[in-house]
Length: 301
Image 1 (cartoon, one colour):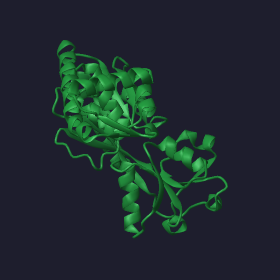
Image 2 (tube, helix red, strand yellow; image 1 turned 90 degrees about the horizontal axis):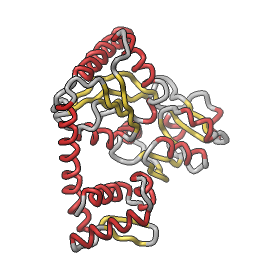
Image 3 (cartoon, one colour; image 1 turned 90 degrees about the vertical axis):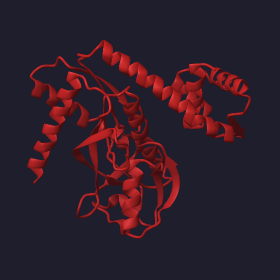
Image 4 (cartoon, one colour; image 1 turned 180 degrees about the vertical axis):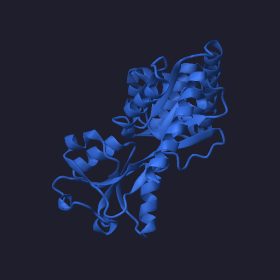
């Protein structure tokens, strides 16, 4: 059993799609299939079952997955700890963030930090992904900071500071009857067919809470992994969605309509792992973010 095989298995278990997993791993699909088959042969049990185009874990795969993830997590933590020991005064911060804050919030935050520091001697490396995977990398130690919502994160090591409120919109294709509305209420679209983000994500929690507040059970047509997929399905006139604004909305020929009256928002936070040692650069950035949070609260109260 090799480390590479474990990585391939975990990625395939996450996507349940050989082609997507191979793309994420930057390898060919035959190479992935061979590695998985060799791992199954080594363990003496099938890890996946394939029925047509559907890929799912077998009972053996489900049982083995947490151990494989744990092994990879421990190795990542060990590597990260060695890097911190070798570079205790590292001036690089590894920052992960969700896609919907990448266009204006992240550049503005970094620029404000450089102004606060009075120099640019601290560098950043960036990763964009969904919240679940970012938090996983934060716990592993491969990310120093994550900027994402965190309403459902329950881990004593993860600490957070609220940064700002991100507005959510009702999104429809341009020819939809509601597209001409300047604002909408939930009663306007309660009977629509919805494209929803997958369960367990913060955006799902926010939209689900909105529906429950109004005693509505949405007609969910598709569940997807991220906001670009939501936008593309809406653009294909397969349903409507509730999501933040992203620049690609125009390319999908869809419209984002604000809610009538009080804005519907979610809190975007900066998150870090408080169970590992922080570099001076990371401490400086956290100090700035805490000051920035205090300044934002002062401006809005």
